[in-house]
Amino acid sequence: MRCPFCKKTENKVIDSRLSHEGRAIRRRRECLSCERRFTTYERVEDTLPLVVKKDGRRESFDREKISGGLKKAVEKRPVPAEQLEQMLDAIEQKVQEAGEKEVQSRFIGELVMKALQQIDDVAYVRFASVYRDFRDVQEFMNELKELLAERSKLDRAARKRVSRAS
Image (cartoon, rainbow, N blue to C red):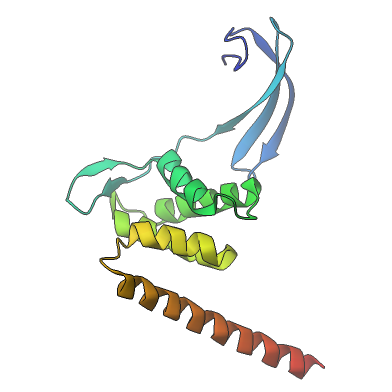
């Protein structure tokens, strides 16, 4: 493993532990040259399906591409990095569990939108506006109205549960 600071490859592992619900190993390393510490993650290389894009092109599943979209959506929002990692893990697991050799890009997009909708409305709207490629303001407003209606239903259901418990 190359040190991210001095780029030397000589380092030692000073701590290892399970991470991401046992699906990865977190290793704390120390560079033998500059003596700085850094963390690496080791995970099983899964055979993930090809992603079929809207135009019919096929490309390998790319976790980092999804991560980039999520980071843009939650930029300047109160969403912890750990929560993003958990979302990425869950999305990747669902894609893998689909058991297909190919998945449509819209399947992945819908998984991302569903996850974002549960944690941050603004991030959801940001992602949806790019992903759904709204043609005009009216389409965008319709999406917002649906989101607000769904939130209102959830709020009413929560209030009912609270009043029954009282």
